[in-house]
Each structure stands twice: as structure tokens, then as C-alpha cells.
Image 1 (tube, rainbow over the protein chains, first blue to last red):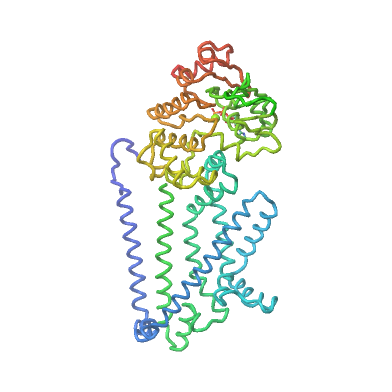
Image 2: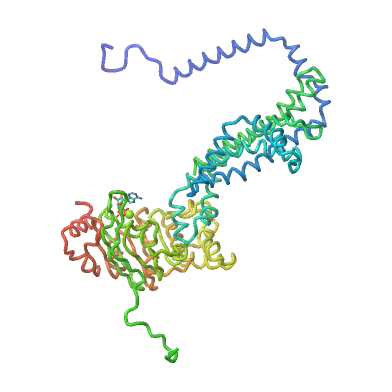
Length: 272
Length: 261
Ligand SMILES: Nc1ncnc2c1ncn2[C@@H]1O[C@H](COP(=O)(O)OP(=O)(O)OP(=O)(O)O)[C@@H](O)[C@H]1O
Ligand SMILES: [Mg+2]
């Protein structure tokens, strides 16, 4: 510009105006895409495939059994994952080498294997290798172990990070009061570590809710069927996609509030 | 028994010191932080430890309750052989209270639980009893009506007083303070020093790292000046603070007492 003083001759757009314009442009593109979709799509057919109220209504009340099983499988696997995960985390921060090596191997293995393969191992590999083995609770025991093993590896890593995030001063204060290392861990470190890792643990619960759909590989009955398998059976028998939509909505009913909770807990963590 | 039991307990002519440190060395890698410390503290004595930053004050204090492991030397404290091969550190630390610069209150516990938790978990004191004792200790340091609050809800001065109450709840024979007022806003320093003065007046044996020269002058029986990992001066506060013998101490005191120049 030749005139370094005073206001520029040509009034430039303020940042706020520029932002407004760019946003308007993006809305316009979005609207165009939506319109195109609306015009191109065969709405009658879509409604017919996904929104058949009669088919959805016929899924009740049996869908509740499947819904409940999804919750039960998730909670069982989570309970197993928590107990074993915390133990593995404790071994990972142990002073005793062999504990650490075992825990490291455990985490690497079960975090590295697909959950589906672990389920197969638990459901078919182990019974073949150890004939006559009985899982307590039948399929429920199999699920707790099959999904819980994978989950425990993730939980162990979260909890280990939590343990290491507890400030050193907390441990020194506890030791100065005469608490033994074990007592310090139980009374001071673990409670604080678990608080720190509530958000990732909540996310793990979301992942497990979805992974419970893998249980079908174990071969389930009507009574032990979870949501995905149930929806797929209905899809087959009705030749219509409405069951998938209903099943999906029921998953979201579980996972969306959990995710929201995890987000809120994360923010609370930041505020502290 | 050859002698008849006496009705009056006869203390030995020279009571053994509550803290005895001999030839203490501490190295962090190549960095020798403590270079031969000898120190006796008798029961009921208040000793203030002063010295420039990095001179090893915290390290010395933390060696007394073995938060830092000495590289060389022997320590006995509160009747425990801290450096012996069969030292029971957990048992010893019950008798040695420690107060930190950053308070280090247990952030997940209420104020009451902070004070009651160690008696309950370490000494297996029944809950009701431990909590009653905790309330008394909190009242002593002037914290009342905050039992259910979390540490973060208290001011720094209040937190530090709770930390003192927490240490006292174990009925220690010796108290270690590592710059207990250095993290506090100036207007909150007085309330913590007042609690410490009260404690000294009750006869508690105290080793205090501090930059509060007023406190040292008024409360200490003895002031130690630590520099470069050795005790350079040791004596009554009037002597060490008013007429230091070494140039280093003179310089340091001048800086602390006249921070403006
Ligand atoms: N855990 C540690 N590992 C390595 N070096 C350490 C450790 N703790 C202390 N030091 C070193 O030891 C020296 C003395 O530290 P110390 O904390 O005892 O000093 P100080 O006198 O308390 O100082 P300040 O007044 O700053 O608190 C410093 O050089 C410090 O860097
Ligand atoms: Mg220090």
C-alpha cells in the first residue's frame, strides 16, 4: 500500500465479516448436497426398507431379551476386564521383574489380537484342548472371559497410566505416615488413579457394548441372543431392514449417553 | 533385679538425642548433595535449617525419615535405627511426622478422612475413635466446620494446617517441616507459623527447613546454616542470625533479610 498512514483507502473485510461469508458458503454447499440427495433418493423404497412400523412392532417384546443380553454381556465382560485389568496394571508397575514381564506380555497379546479371535479361542480352542472343561455360567462365563480378556488389556493400560499420573507427593505423604507400599497403593494411589481414568474406562464400556455383537460366534439360543444377532435373524425372516434400524437405535440408546457421560467426566477432570 | 525399683524414674545423665546423624552422605549420581553431616537433636529441641537453594536442606530432612536413602552414614530418629539392616521404616515413620511445602493432602479424601485415615489404616484405630481424635486435632490447628470439605476447597494456609493435624494424629515424637510456608500467599503464612509456635511451646521436637527468619529467631533453639552439603554454622539463633562467622552465611542472610537490594 502506498499510504502507510491513516485508514486504507479500500475498506478491507473485517475478520468477523470474512468468517460470516465463509460460513454462509459452507451452508450453501451443504444445502445443495442435501437437495441433490433428496431428489435422487427413492424415498418410497427407503421408507419401505427401514421404516416398516408393523415389522418393528412385531419385534416386541422379544427384542427386550436381546437388549438385556447385550447389557448383561457388556457388564460381565467389563467386570472381568476391570478385576483382571487392575491386577495386570498393578503387576506392570511392580518392582518385581517377572510380574512386569508377564503383565507386559499379557497386554501386548490381548491388545494385539482381534476380539473375535479371542472369542473363538475361548469358545472353541480351549474346550478342544481341555476336553470336559465347563465355563461357570455357560455362555455367560464364556463371554465374560472371551470379551473380558481383550478388554482387560486395554483397561490395564488405562489404569497403569492413571497410577503413574498420581502425583509423587501423594505417595510420599502416605509413606511418611507409616503406610506400607501396599497400603499406600490401596488407600491412596489406586482410588486416585481410578478417578483419573474414569473417562477412558467409560469409553471402554462403549467399545464393549458394541463388541458384545461378536458373541454370536459362540452359538447362541433365543434366550441368550444379543441385539445384533437378534436383529439379523429378524432381517432374514422378514427380508426387511427395519430390524437393523431398531437394533441400531437400541445400541445408540446405550452408547450415546455413555459417551456423553465420558465427555462430561473428562471436562470435570480438566476443571480440577 | 539387683536394685530395688525406684519410685522416681531416673533419667540417664545424658538423655540420648532424639535424632542422631553421623557422617551422612547423599549422592544423586555424580552429584554429592550431602557431604558428611553430623547432627544431634535432643528431645524437645526446635532446630531450624537455613541455607541457599540447592544446598541440600530438603535432602537432609528427607534422609531423616528415609524418604531419601542415604549413600553413607547412620541415622537414628525417634528411637529407631533408620539405617540399620533390620530397620522397620513403616514403624519408624509412624513416630516421625512430616509436613511438605506443597501440603500433599490426599486429594480424594475429605478433610476429616485426611486426618483419620492413617490412624485407621496403619494403627487400626476404630473409625469412631480415629474420627473423634481427628476432630480434636483439627480444632487444635483452628480448622473447624470443614470436616467434609475436600482439600482443594480450602485455602493454602488451611490446607497446611490440616497437613500438620494429619501428621500429629499419628502422635509422632518428632516433626519434620520442609518449607511449610513457602507455597503460601504472604497473608496466610502467619496462621501456619502460629500453629508451629504452639507445637514448639508444647515441647514437640522439630526440624524445620525455613526461610522465615523471624520464626527461626523467635522459636528455634538452634539454627543450622547449610551450604554445599555441609553444616557451615550451628548455634543459637541470636548468634547465627545476628553474627554469622562465615562470609557465605553473612551473604545469604543479607539476601534473605534485605531482598530488595
Ligand atoms: N531426586 C533427585 N534426583 C537428583 N537430584 C536431586 C534429587 N533431589 C534433589 N536433587 C539435587 O540435590 C540438590 C539439593 O537439593 P535439595 O532439594 O535438597 O535443596 P534445597 O536446599 O532443599 O533447595 P531449595 O531451597 O531450592 O528447596 C540439588 O542440586 C538438586 O538438584
Ligand atoms: Mg528444598
